[in-house]
Length: 274
Ligand code: NAP
Image (cartoon, rainbow, N blue to C red; front, top):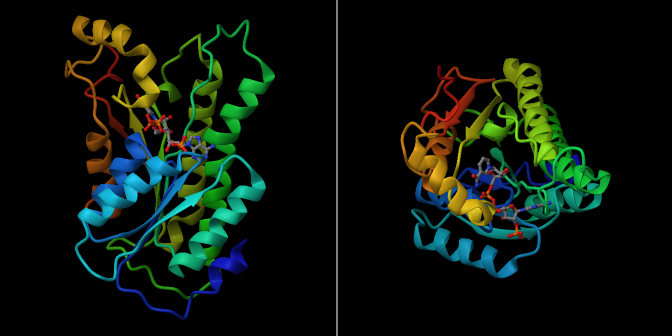
């Protein structure tokens, strides 16, 4: 896994390289496009939606700032050990290096069920995608960066950003496996931030609230009503661009000396009220 990334160490490219998982749609696509706009090369991971991934590549291309930027698509289920390894190999072959990892790919339960009815297969699928995949991608990136002499091209050293969720702290009884996976991802961010801080690698958690994407299409009317009632203090849906802007602030070095941080992007949804 690591050997494949090491292959490219001697080669030089001008643009830093970011791998964004789940970048074919939604928040991941917005992060990819903002990264392209800010001069990054982008490895766009997706699970199965090739057409959407190609649209992300097209959008990245239209934001290109330098001829050294490269935009590539890589199909892989991040929850599968074999496919995750193949993903790393394929990114290494395409870009020869990696400067930042954005663990964005995520899945909600296919069917929302009360925790009295949660099935092991749904629990396993959600945990593999939302927790196991990101954990071991962080391990692969950290091992690679720690075992070599490659200097980061990004403005703030090597960076990992994990996209968790308000569900890391807000309990939803009808999708417990999702909440558990995001709470686990939050601790994984903390662990990796602690483990690699002394090497100049930062790890931050972005915690989005209610964001308008395919993931929330099925609950749009219900959330429209909740937002109108004031559940979100800012009284609006979040957008993928809201999350991408904060992510690029981190990738762009505008939060120096920050690691292990949890950054809410939720219009105040997390604020406890009385
Ligand atoms: P989305 O619109 O449903 O898009 C999901 C993306 O993840 C797609 O690109 C999908 O690829 C990819 N994906 C799903 N399972 C994957 C897997 N096993 N391996 C690789 N890629 C996979 O989701 P989103 O709303 O943008 O959510 C992005 C992240 O933000 C997720 O981690 C989600 O939990 C988190 N989040 C979302 C909200 C929200 O309100 N939307 C709030 C808080 C946190 P394909 O296109 O190939 O299916």
